[in-house]
Image (cartoon, rainbow, N blue to C red):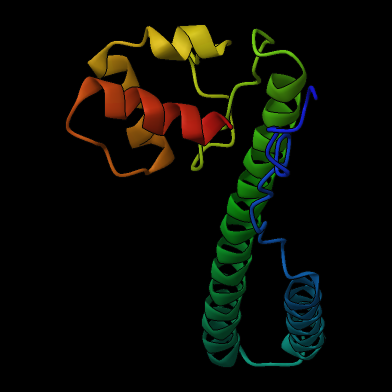
Length: 165
């Protein structure tokens, strides 16, 4: 009969584990920043009653506290941006897989640069274009994505294809 030799896992999609942002950590960080800012406001209220020499010292302490808060905010922002970009790329990979299963000549979506969050320039838009990538183009894409770069052109193309699917 027709279809007897069809493998059971035909059309199965390997869904990668996606690391989502830890929203509890984000909330805790925001609460800490909020507490720090409230403390600074309290210091400003006391500031008006200090002598000029004490005011200078107080200004330096407030300045140092603000710098620390800004460093924490910047680290949290970079971490959240990186995680969101990784999640977005995982979603793009899944959508590309689903499109490719139903139509092997379907257009694939471009991936995002992990550091900037922007779409990677000059990305292939079909599997056929991936199969025609030069060694330099494949190396560029793999390097941007932080993937180990294979030595031969066919392996480079396969590595790029796996990043999209």
